[in-house]
Length: 492
Image 1 (spheres, rainbow, N blue to C red):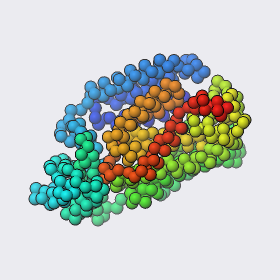
Image 2 (cartoon, one colour):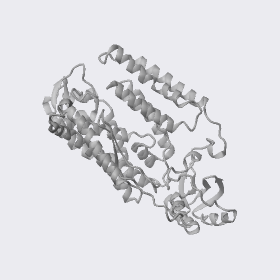
Image 3 (cartoon, one colour):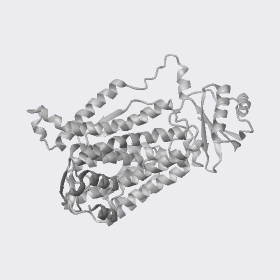
Image 4 (tube, rainbow, N blue to C red):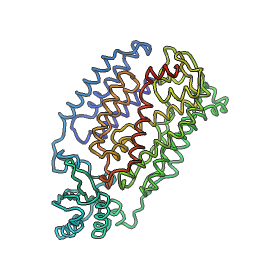
Protein backbone atom coordinates (compact mmCIF):
# COMPACT_ATOMS: atom_id res chain seq x y z
CA UNK A 1 0.00 0.00 0.00
CA UNK A 2 2.90 2.37 0.79
CA UNK A 3 4.37 1.78 -2.67
CA UNK A 4 1.09 2.47 -4.47
CA UNK A 5 0.40 5.56 -2.38
CA UNK A 6 3.87 6.96 -3.07
CA UNK A 7 3.51 6.16 -6.77
CA UNK A 8 0.14 7.92 -6.91
CA UNK A 9 1.44 10.96 -5.03
CA UNK A 10 4.53 11.15 -7.24
CA UNK A 11 2.54 10.93 -10.45
CA UNK A 12 0.01 13.55 -9.31
CA UNK A 13 2.79 15.89 -8.17
CA UNK A 14 4.68 15.57 -11.45
CA UNK A 15 1.57 16.27 -13.54
CA UNK A 16 0.73 19.32 -11.43
CA UNK A 17 4.24 20.76 -11.64
CA UNK A 18 4.30 20.17 -15.39
CA UNK A 19 0.93 21.83 -15.87
CA UNK A 20 1.37 24.78 -13.52
CA UNK A 21 4.98 25.98 -13.84
CA UNK A 22 6.60 24.28 -16.83
CA UNK A 23 5.68 27.19 -19.10
CA UNK A 24 7.02 29.79 -16.64
CA UNK A 25 10.51 28.49 -15.81
CA UNK A 26 13.42 26.81 -17.56
CA UNK A 27 14.26 24.76 -14.48
CA UNK A 28 13.70 21.07 -15.36
CA UNK A 29 10.34 19.74 -14.23
CA UNK A 30 11.95 16.60 -12.83
CA UNK A 31 14.17 18.69 -10.52
CA UNK A 32 11.25 20.71 -9.17
CA UNK A 33 9.32 17.47 -8.73
CA UNK A 34 12.19 15.86 -6.83
CA UNK A 35 12.41 18.81 -4.43
CA UNK A 36 8.67 18.71 -3.70
CA UNK A 37 8.69 14.94 -3.19
CA UNK A 38 11.67 14.94 -0.81
CA UNK A 39 9.56 15.22 2.40
CA UNK A 40 7.39 12.32 1.22
CA UNK A 41 10.50 10.25 0.47
CA UNK A 42 11.88 11.03 3.94
CA UNK A 43 8.62 10.01 5.65
CA UNK A 44 8.43 6.82 3.59
CA UNK A 45 12.04 5.98 4.41
CA UNK A 46 11.41 6.56 8.11
CA UNK A 47 8.37 4.27 8.02
CA UNK A 48 10.33 1.51 6.26
CA UNK A 49 13.18 1.76 8.78
CA UNK A 50 11.26 2.15 12.04
CA UNK A 51 7.74 0.97 11.19
CA UNK A 52 4.41 2.74 11.39
CA UNK A 53 4.25 2.47 15.20
CA UNK A 54 7.08 4.98 15.68
CA UNK A 55 6.06 8.38 14.25
CA UNK A 56 8.79 10.55 12.73
CA UNK A 57 10.03 13.52 14.78
CA UNK A 58 8.11 16.72 14.11
CA UNK A 59 11.38 18.56 13.46
CA UNK A 60 12.06 16.27 10.49
CA UNK A 61 8.70 17.15 8.93
CA UNK A 62 8.98 20.85 9.75
CA UNK A 63 12.51 21.55 8.54
CA UNK A 64 12.35 19.30 5.48
CA UNK A 65 9.15 21.08 4.40
CA UNK A 66 10.60 24.56 4.97
CA UNK A 67 13.87 23.77 3.19
CA UNK A 68 12.15 22.10 0.23
CA UNK A 69 9.61 24.88 -0.25
CA UNK A 70 12.38 27.50 -0.10
CA UNK A 71 14.56 25.50 -2.51
CA UNK A 72 11.61 25.00 -4.86
CA UNK A 73 11.00 28.77 -4.94
CA UNK A 74 14.69 29.52 -5.56
CA UNK A 75 14.92 26.99 -8.39
CA UNK A 76 11.73 28.32 -9.94
CA UNK A 77 12.99 31.93 -9.81
CA UNK A 78 16.45 30.93 -11.07
CA UNK A 79 14.96 29.45 -14.24
CA UNK A 80 12.18 31.99 -14.70
CA UNK A 81 11.66 32.87 -18.35
CA UNK A 82 12.33 36.41 -19.46
CA UNK A 83 9.14 38.08 -20.69
CA UNK A 84 9.17 38.61 -24.45
CA UNK A 85 6.22 40.93 -24.76
CA UNK A 86 3.96 43.12 -22.70
CA UNK A 87 1.32 40.46 -22.43
CA UNK A 88 3.61 38.25 -20.35
CA UNK A 89 4.95 40.97 -18.06
CA UNK A 90 3.79 40.45 -14.46
CA UNK A 91 2.77 44.09 -14.13
CA UNK A 92 -0.64 43.37 -12.67
CA UNK A 93 -2.91 40.47 -11.99
CA UNK A 94 -5.29 41.44 -14.75
CA UNK A 95 -2.60 41.00 -17.40
CA UNK A 96 -2.38 37.36 -16.38
CA UNK A 97 -6.00 36.44 -15.83
CA UNK A 98 -8.27 38.34 -18.18
CA UNK A 99 -8.09 35.71 -20.90
CA UNK A 100 -10.60 33.06 -19.94
CA UNK A 101 -9.35 29.49 -20.51
CA UNK A 102 -12.40 28.76 -22.65
CA UNK A 103 -11.37 31.55 -24.99
CA UNK A 104 -8.56 29.58 -26.61
CA UNK A 105 -6.44 31.42 -29.20
CA UNK A 106 -8.43 31.72 -32.41
CA UNK A 107 -7.93 33.81 -35.51
CA UNK A 108 -10.50 36.60 -35.61
CA UNK A 109 -10.56 39.96 -37.33
CA UNK A 110 -9.00 42.44 -34.87
CA UNK A 111 -10.45 45.84 -34.12
CA UNK A 112 -9.60 48.01 -37.09
CA UNK A 113 -8.61 51.65 -36.60
CA UNK A 114 -11.86 52.65 -38.26
CA UNK A 115 -13.77 50.57 -35.70
CA UNK A 116 -12.33 52.28 -32.65
CA UNK A 117 -14.98 54.97 -32.83
CA UNK A 118 -17.66 52.28 -32.84
CA UNK A 119 -15.99 50.68 -29.82
CA UNK A 120 -15.87 53.95 -27.89
CA UNK A 121 -19.52 54.58 -28.71
CA UNK A 122 -20.37 51.35 -26.89
CA UNK A 123 -19.37 53.04 -23.61
CA UNK A 124 -21.83 55.84 -22.76
CA UNK A 125 -20.18 58.45 -20.56
CA UNK A 126 -23.05 58.18 -18.04
CA UNK A 127 -22.41 54.44 -17.67
CA UNK A 128 -18.66 53.97 -18.06
CA UNK A 129 -16.47 56.91 -19.02
CA UNK A 130 -13.75 55.31 -21.16
CA UNK A 131 -10.27 56.84 -20.82
CA UNK A 132 -7.91 54.62 -22.81
CA UNK A 133 -7.90 51.46 -24.91
CA UNK A 134 -5.04 48.93 -24.87
CA UNK A 135 -4.62 46.48 -27.75
CA UNK A 136 -3.18 43.06 -26.95
CA UNK A 137 -2.66 40.05 -29.27
CA UNK A 138 -5.73 38.29 -27.85
CA UNK A 139 -7.57 41.06 -26.01
CA UNK A 140 -8.71 44.66 -26.11
CA UNK A 141 -8.61 46.27 -22.66
CA UNK A 142 -10.84 49.28 -22.04
CA UNK A 143 -10.10 51.31 -18.92
CA UNK A 144 -12.12 54.16 -17.51
CA UNK A 145 -14.42 55.32 -14.73
CA UNK A 146 -17.53 53.41 -13.64
CA UNK A 147 -20.50 55.78 -13.21
CA UNK A 148 -23.39 53.43 -12.39
CA UNK A 149 -24.12 50.07 -10.73
CA UNK A 150 -21.73 47.34 -11.98
CA UNK A 151 -24.47 44.95 -13.10
CA UNK A 152 -26.34 47.69 -15.00
CA UNK A 153 -23.10 48.86 -16.64
CA UNK A 154 -22.14 45.36 -17.75
CA UNK A 155 -25.55 44.57 -19.22
CA UNK A 156 -25.77 47.85 -21.13
CA UNK A 157 -22.25 47.74 -22.54
CA UNK A 158 -22.62 44.04 -23.40
CA UNK A 159 -25.75 44.89 -25.41
CA UNK A 160 -23.92 47.73 -27.15
CA UNK A 161 -20.95 45.50 -28.04
CA UNK A 162 -23.25 42.82 -29.45
CA UNK A 163 -25.14 45.42 -31.47
CA UNK A 164 -21.92 46.76 -33.01
CA UNK A 165 -19.80 43.61 -33.37
CA UNK A 166 -22.24 40.70 -33.15
CA UNK A 167 -20.83 37.65 -31.37
CA UNK A 168 -17.19 38.26 -32.33
CA UNK A 169 -16.16 38.94 -28.73
CA UNK A 170 -16.73 37.85 -25.16
CA UNK A 171 -16.99 40.80 -22.79
CA UNK A 172 -15.22 40.43 -19.43
CA UNK A 173 -15.72 42.89 -16.58
CA UNK A 174 -12.96 42.70 -13.94
CA UNK A 175 -11.61 44.67 -11.01
CA UNK A 176 -8.00 45.80 -11.40
CA UNK A 177 -5.24 45.98 -8.80
CA UNK A 178 -6.16 49.64 -8.24
CA UNK A 179 -9.74 48.56 -7.41
CA UNK A 180 -11.01 50.22 -10.59
CA UNK A 181 -13.15 47.96 -12.81
CA UNK A 182 -12.20 47.59 -16.47
CA UNK A 183 -13.62 45.84 -19.54
CA UNK A 184 -11.85 43.30 -21.73
CA UNK A 185 -12.91 42.07 -25.17
CA UNK A 186 -11.56 38.63 -26.05
CA UNK A 187 -12.26 36.55 -29.18
CA UNK A 188 -15.31 34.33 -28.89
CA UNK A 189 -14.06 30.84 -29.83
CA UNK A 190 -17.57 29.51 -30.45
CA UNK A 191 -18.26 32.28 -32.94
CA UNK A 192 -14.99 31.55 -34.75
CA UNK A 193 -15.81 27.83 -34.93
CA UNK A 194 -19.30 28.50 -36.23
CA UNK A 195 -17.79 30.29 -39.23
CA UNK A 196 -17.14 26.80 -40.61
CA UNK A 197 -20.59 25.24 -41.24
CA UNK A 198 -19.12 21.74 -41.26
CA UNK A 199 -17.76 22.10 -37.74
CA UNK A 200 -19.76 20.18 -35.16
CA UNK A 201 -18.36 19.93 -31.66
CA UNK A 202 -19.16 16.81 -29.72
CA UNK A 203 -19.66 18.23 -26.26
CA UNK A 204 -20.49 15.04 -24.39
CA UNK A 205 -19.70 11.40 -25.01
CA UNK A 206 -22.46 9.33 -23.40
CA UNK A 207 -20.82 6.08 -24.46
CA UNK A 208 -17.52 7.00 -22.77
CA UNK A 209 -19.34 8.23 -19.65
CA UNK A 210 -21.28 4.94 -19.41
CA UNK A 211 -18.14 2.86 -19.98
CA UNK A 212 -16.26 4.69 -17.22
CA UNK A 213 -19.28 4.34 -14.93
CA UNK A 214 -19.37 0.57 -15.39
CA UNK A 215 -15.59 0.24 -15.03
CA UNK A 216 -15.65 2.27 -11.80
CA UNK A 217 -18.50 0.14 -10.46
CA UNK A 218 -16.31 -2.94 -11.05
CA UNK A 219 -13.18 -1.50 -9.42
CA UNK A 220 -15.02 -0.08 -6.40
CA UNK A 221 -16.89 -3.36 -5.96
CA UNK A 222 -13.57 -5.22 -5.82
CA UNK A 223 -12.28 -2.79 -3.20
CA UNK A 224 -15.57 -3.04 -1.29
CA UNK A 225 -15.31 -6.82 -1.29
CA UNK A 226 -11.89 -6.55 0.29
CA UNK A 227 -13.22 -4.08 2.87
CA UNK A 228 -15.94 -6.58 3.73
CA UNK A 229 -13.22 -9.04 4.73
CA UNK A 230 -13.57 -11.37 1.76
CA UNK A 231 -10.47 -13.08 0.40
CA UNK A 232 -10.28 -12.05 -3.27
CA UNK A 233 -8.83 -15.46 -4.15
CA UNK A 234 -12.24 -17.08 -3.64
CA UNK A 235 -13.94 -14.88 -6.26
CA UNK A 236 -13.15 -17.34 -9.05
CA UNK A 237 -14.85 -20.20 -7.25
CA UNK A 238 -17.60 -18.08 -5.67
CA UNK A 239 -18.39 -15.02 -7.84
CA UNK A 240 -21.39 -14.25 -5.65
CA UNK A 241 -19.12 -12.90 -2.91
CA UNK A 242 -18.71 -9.78 -5.07
CA UNK A 243 -22.17 -8.75 -3.92
CA UNK A 244 -20.64 -7.98 -0.52
CA UNK A 245 -18.65 -5.19 -2.18
CA UNK A 246 -21.71 -3.45 -3.62
CA UNK A 247 -22.68 -1.48 -0.47
CA UNK A 248 -19.34 0.34 -0.52
CA UNK A 249 -19.30 0.71 -4.30
CA UNK A 250 -22.83 2.03 -4.63
CA UNK A 251 -22.45 4.30 -1.60
CA UNK A 252 -19.23 5.91 -2.81
CA UNK A 253 -20.33 6.22 -6.43
CA UNK A 254 -23.66 7.74 -5.36
CA UNK A 255 -21.84 10.41 -3.33
CA UNK A 256 -19.40 11.23 -6.14
CA UNK A 257 -22.09 11.10 -8.82
CA UNK A 258 -24.53 13.35 -6.95
CA UNK A 259 -21.68 15.80 -6.27
CA UNK A 260 -20.91 16.12 -9.98
CA UNK A 261 -24.59 16.16 -10.95
CA UNK A 262 -25.01 19.13 -8.63
CA UNK A 263 -22.41 20.99 -10.69
CA UNK A 264 -23.83 19.73 -14.00
CA UNK A 265 -27.48 20.60 -13.39
CA UNK A 266 -26.65 24.04 -11.99
CA UNK A 267 -24.44 24.73 -15.01
CA UNK A 268 -27.35 23.75 -17.25
CA UNK A 269 -29.62 26.12 -15.33
CA UNK A 270 -27.28 29.00 -16.20
CA UNK A 271 -26.90 27.81 -19.83
CA UNK A 272 -23.23 26.97 -19.26
CA UNK A 273 -22.05 24.25 -21.61
CA UNK A 274 -20.72 21.29 -19.60
CA UNK A 275 -19.83 17.67 -20.21
CA UNK A 276 -21.48 14.71 -18.52
CA UNK A 277 -19.83 13.47 -15.29
CA UNK A 278 -16.92 11.13 -15.99
CA UNK A 279 -15.75 8.64 -13.33
CA UNK A 280 -12.08 7.65 -13.00
CA UNK A 281 -11.66 3.92 -12.23
CA UNK A 282 -8.51 2.47 -10.64
CA UNK A 283 -8.01 -1.17 -9.65
CA UNK A 284 -6.47 -0.36 -6.23
CA UNK A 285 -6.60 2.14 -3.37
CA UNK A 286 -10.25 3.38 -3.17
CA UNK A 287 -11.32 1.89 -6.50
CA UNK A 288 -11.68 5.35 -8.04
CA UNK A 289 -9.98 8.72 -8.19
CA UNK A 290 -13.35 10.45 -8.18
CA UNK A 291 -15.38 12.00 -10.99
CA UNK A 292 -15.33 15.27 -12.89
CA UNK A 293 -17.13 17.43 -15.43
CA UNK A 294 -15.69 20.03 -17.77
CA UNK A 295 -17.10 23.50 -18.37
CA UNK A 296 -16.96 24.42 -22.05
CA UNK A 297 -18.22 28.01 -21.86
CA UNK A 298 -17.46 31.01 -19.62
CA UNK A 299 -19.23 31.62 -16.31
CA UNK A 300 -21.53 34.65 -16.84
CA UNK A 301 -21.18 36.27 -13.38
CA UNK A 302 -20.15 35.74 -9.78
CA UNK A 303 -23.66 34.61 -8.84
CA UNK A 304 -23.47 31.76 -11.35
CA UNK A 305 -19.89 30.99 -10.27
CA UNK A 306 -21.05 30.68 -6.66
CA UNK A 307 -24.11 28.57 -7.41
CA UNK A 308 -22.33 26.14 -9.74
CA UNK A 309 -19.41 25.76 -7.32
CA UNK A 310 -21.36 25.24 -4.11
CA UNK A 311 -24.01 22.97 -5.66
CA UNK A 312 -21.58 20.02 -5.87
CA UNK A 313 -20.37 19.98 -2.23
CA UNK A 314 -23.88 20.63 -0.89
CA UNK A 315 -25.46 17.87 -3.00
CA UNK A 316 -22.69 15.43 -2.13
CA UNK A 317 -22.85 16.28 1.58
CA UNK A 318 -26.65 15.86 1.70
CA UNK A 319 -26.22 12.31 0.36
CA UNK A 320 -23.17 11.64 2.55
CA UNK A 321 -24.93 12.40 5.86
CA UNK A 322 -27.58 9.62 5.89
CA UNK A 323 -25.16 7.07 4.40
CA UNK A 324 -22.51 7.87 7.02
CA UNK A 325 -24.97 7.83 9.94
CA UNK A 326 -26.47 4.51 8.79
CA UNK A 327 -23.01 3.05 8.25
CA UNK A 328 -21.78 4.21 11.66
CA UNK A 329 -24.87 2.73 13.34
CA UNK A 330 -23.99 -0.64 11.75
CA UNK A 331 -20.28 -0.40 12.57
CA UNK A 332 -18.53 -2.12 15.48
CA UNK A 333 -16.95 -0.37 18.43
CA UNK A 334 -13.42 -1.64 19.11
CA UNK A 335 -10.71 -0.69 21.57
CA UNK A 336 -8.14 1.95 20.75
CA UNK A 337 -4.84 0.36 19.74
CA UNK A 338 -1.55 1.19 18.05
CA UNK A 339 -3.11 0.79 14.61
CA UNK A 340 -5.86 3.34 15.27
CA UNK A 341 -5.77 6.20 12.78
CA UNK A 342 -7.83 8.29 10.37
CA UNK A 343 -6.82 6.12 7.42
CA UNK A 344 -7.54 2.78 9.09
CA UNK A 345 -11.19 1.75 8.55
CA UNK A 346 -10.75 -1.17 10.96
CA UNK A 347 -9.91 1.11 13.89
CA UNK A 348 -10.92 4.70 13.17
CA UNK A 349 -10.58 7.26 15.95
CA UNK A 350 -13.62 9.55 15.50
CA UNK A 351 -11.92 12.39 17.37
CA UNK A 352 -9.80 13.17 14.30
CA UNK A 353 -12.74 15.29 13.07
CA UNK A 354 -15.28 17.42 14.95
CA UNK A 355 -18.15 16.48 12.62
CA UNK A 356 -17.21 12.80 12.51
CA UNK A 357 -17.12 12.68 16.31
CA UNK A 358 -20.57 14.28 16.59
CA UNK A 359 -22.09 11.92 14.03
CA UNK A 360 -20.40 8.89 15.62
CA UNK A 361 -21.80 9.77 19.04
CA UNK A 362 -25.24 10.29 17.49
CA UNK A 363 -25.16 6.90 15.75
CA UNK A 364 -23.44 4.78 18.42
CA UNK A 365 -24.59 6.46 21.63
CA UNK A 366 -23.12 5.34 24.95
CA UNK A 367 -21.25 2.43 23.40
CA UNK A 368 -18.70 4.96 22.14
CA UNK A 369 -16.31 6.00 24.94
CA UNK A 370 -12.98 7.75 25.30
CA UNK A 371 -11.19 4.41 24.82
CA UNK A 372 -13.14 3.41 21.73
CA UNK A 373 -12.36 3.28 18.04
CA UNK A 374 -14.71 2.26 15.22
CA UNK A 375 -14.48 -0.69 12.86
CA UNK A 376 -16.30 0.90 9.96
CA UNK A 377 -19.05 -0.80 7.99
CA UNK A 378 -18.33 -0.56 4.21
CA UNK A 379 -21.14 1.99 3.84
CA UNK A 380 -19.57 4.03 6.66
CA UNK A 381 -16.26 3.91 4.77
CA UNK A 382 -18.02 5.36 1.73
CA UNK A 383 -19.64 8.04 3.89
CA UNK A 384 -16.33 8.90 5.56
CA UNK A 385 -14.73 9.27 2.12
CA UNK A 386 -17.68 11.51 1.22
CA UNK A 387 -16.67 13.81 4.09
CA UNK A 388 -13.09 13.86 2.82
CA UNK A 389 -14.22 14.64 -0.73
CA UNK A 390 -16.43 17.46 0.59
CA UNK A 391 -13.61 18.94 2.65
CA UNK A 392 -11.04 18.70 -0.14
CA UNK A 393 -13.36 20.40 -2.61
CA UNK A 394 -14.25 23.15 -0.13
CA UNK A 395 -10.61 24.15 0.37
CA UNK A 396 -10.62 27.88 -0.54
CA UNK A 397 -7.76 27.64 -3.01
CA UNK A 398 -7.66 28.42 -6.73
CA UNK A 399 -9.94 26.38 -8.96
CA UNK A 400 -11.25 24.07 -6.24
CA UNK A 401 -14.93 24.55 -5.40
CA UNK A 402 -13.97 26.43 -2.24
CA UNK A 403 -11.68 28.69 -4.26
CA UNK A 404 -14.56 29.54 -6.58
CA UNK A 405 -16.81 30.20 -3.58
CA UNK A 406 -14.49 32.71 -1.87
CA UNK A 407 -13.79 34.29 -5.26
CA UNK A 408 -17.51 34.80 -5.80
CA UNK A 409 -17.99 36.22 -2.29
CA UNK A 410 -14.93 38.44 -1.87
CA UNK A 411 -13.58 38.98 -5.38
CA UNK A 412 -10.44 37.72 -7.09
CA UNK A 413 -7.78 39.63 -5.13
CA UNK A 414 -9.14 38.81 -1.66
CA UNK A 415 -9.65 35.18 -2.70
CA UNK A 416 -5.96 34.91 -3.55
CA UNK A 417 -5.02 36.13 -0.06
CA UNK A 418 -7.47 33.69 1.53
CA UNK A 419 -6.06 30.85 -0.54
CA UNK A 420 -2.53 31.68 0.57
CA UNK A 421 -3.61 31.66 4.23
CA UNK A 422 -5.45 28.35 3.75
CA UNK A 423 -2.28 26.80 2.34
CA UNK A 424 -0.25 27.96 5.35
CA UNK A 425 -2.84 26.90 7.93
CA UNK A 426 -3.18 23.41 6.46
CA UNK A 427 0.59 23.05 6.38
CA UNK A 428 0.73 24.00 10.07
CA UNK A 429 -2.11 21.58 10.84
CA UNK A 430 -0.18 18.79 9.12
CA UNK A 431 2.46 19.07 11.86
CA UNK A 432 -0.26 18.01 14.33
CA UNK A 433 -1.96 15.49 12.06
CA UNK A 434 0.54 14.10 9.58
CA UNK A 435 -2.26 12.77 7.37
CA UNK A 436 -2.91 16.30 6.10
CA UNK A 437 0.64 16.72 4.85
CA UNK A 438 -0.22 15.32 1.41
CA UNK A 439 -3.16 17.72 1.18
CA UNK A 440 -0.88 20.62 2.09
CA UNK A 441 1.57 19.69 -0.68
CA UNK A 442 -1.25 19.38 -3.22
CA UNK A 443 -2.61 22.82 -2.28
CA UNK A 444 0.84 24.33 -2.73
CA UNK A 445 0.81 23.11 -6.33
CA UNK A 446 -2.63 24.49 -7.18
CA UNK A 447 -2.50 28.00 -8.71
CA UNK A 448 -4.11 30.67 -6.54
CA UNK A 449 -5.49 32.66 -9.49
CA UNK A 450 -9.01 31.58 -10.39
CA UNK A 451 -10.73 32.00 -13.75
CA UNK A 452 -12.70 35.25 -13.94
CA UNK A 453 -16.41 35.28 -14.61
CA UNK A 454 -17.52 37.45 -17.51
CA UNK A 455 -19.01 39.91 -15.03
CA UNK A 456 -16.50 39.56 -12.23
CA UNK A 457 -17.38 42.81 -10.46
CA UNK A 458 -21.05 42.60 -9.41
CA UNK A 459 -21.19 41.31 -5.83
CA UNK A 460 -23.38 38.57 -4.36
CA UNK A 461 -26.50 39.02 -2.24
CA UNK A 462 -26.46 38.48 1.53
CA UNK A 463 -28.08 35.02 1.35
CA UNK A 464 -25.29 33.66 -0.80
CA UNK A 465 -22.65 35.32 1.38
CA UNK A 466 -24.09 33.56 4.45
CA UNK A 467 -24.34 30.23 2.63
CA UNK A 468 -20.71 30.55 1.54
CA UNK A 469 -19.55 31.24 5.10
CA UNK A 470 -21.56 28.24 6.32
CA UNK A 471 -19.76 26.06 3.77
CA UNK A 472 -16.42 27.24 5.17
CA UNK A 473 -17.70 26.38 8.67
CA UNK A 474 -18.50 22.88 7.40
CA UNK A 475 -14.93 22.60 6.10
CA UNK A 476 -13.53 23.55 9.51
CA UNK A 477 -15.76 21.00 11.28
CA UNK A 478 -14.56 18.22 8.98
CA UNK A 479 -10.86 19.09 9.05
CA UNK A 480 -10.19 20.13 12.66
CA UNK A 481 -9.77 17.49 15.38
CA UNK A 482 -12.28 17.36 18.24
CA UNK A 483 -11.28 19.73 21.09
CA UNK A 484 -10.81 17.98 24.42
CA UNK A 485 -13.47 20.13 26.09
CA UNK A 486 -16.14 18.92 23.63
CA UNK A 487 -14.80 15.35 23.89
CA UNK A 488 -15.30 15.47 27.67
CA UNK A 489 -18.81 16.79 27.18
CA UNK A 490 -19.63 13.96 24.76
CA UNK A 491 -17.79 11.45 26.97
CA UNK A 492 -15.63 10.20 24.12
